[in-house]
Image 1: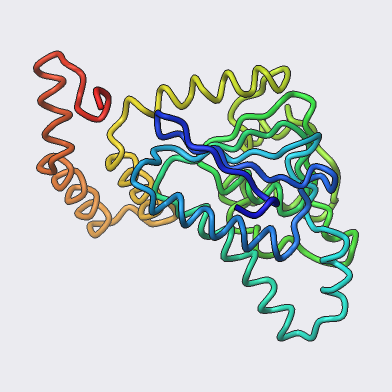
Image 2: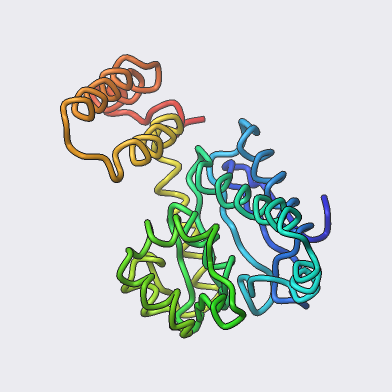
Length: 263
């Protein structure tokens, strides 16, 4: 595995993917983006993996764009910049669409694309001292490829402020906006709360959680019409007759743990 990232998988099937450029505050460059994308796809395909946690080493979760990468971008043609931007867009899409539950463990500050990674995860925990910033406009740029995920996470109104002002905002504000679900006091508490959340997730049907994620994507932003009602009814009917659904219902009625917990 490339040294820009580290992955561990414990005996519960919890994978922890850690960005490992602490001396650069886990800033993005094209290599880190490619490594993260490949590793996320590998974890998606690994049947042992039930949950994916995303973390950063050192003082920061991710400082956004690496200076060296930014210098190279400044010399690129539009076509080269488009290809480069599509690499980052691919990373965000891969993380956002991962079928397994994803948890961001934000142990330090997140800027730019780092905020995008947090928004792409299903759940996010952060230490209270973490800071967040979308500073692209200060460079004459915009947070383009991360914008769909941030607008979904914190809403258009909050994005109007923080995309335009480039203000830093503290973890309590990130929590108020919905970018972060819970705050903890320090890194030790972050790991402990992350483990507790994993224990909750491991009680749930793996395929049901994947289908729940697909359900959210199918329903979000769509009008409540006959087609949507029919689609949602079909989804629960499919779950009820599935092997996992049958096992879950049987286990509940028989007052025992379902097979995915016992195994």
